[in-house]
Image (cartoon, rainbow, N blue to C red; front, side):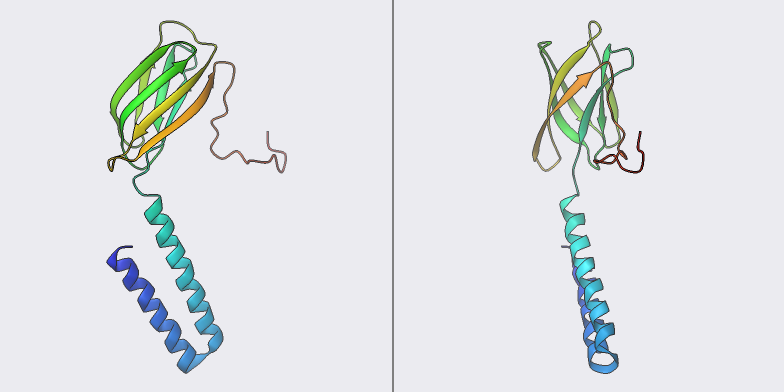
Length: 151
């Protein structure tokens, strides 16, 4: 954690102790719960920093592969392998929220894309995606379980 984050946690802890001593135990408990929630939030913020996320899609006409970086950092040394098309592509860098299109020699009905890349710190990532021209659900807000009449 950074120094300012530790400072905020210590200040809230001191406020909690002062509330316990001079005001009310319940207010001190509320301040302590807020301090714990802040500590967890700071920890999660630290773990999700510098994370690129490359996602491949087939274009509408199925003649191009579109790489999108949905993460919060740039991806380096990107390598895409298309199975069973026996094609490999390399891309040196893709910035956060960046897009890159890879043309294909013809239409692709269905394929599997294996994508490997790394972030600035050298941490390597690898994922496999199914690509299909007949449909693909890339709705980020779609619930895991179909609830409340979701399409």
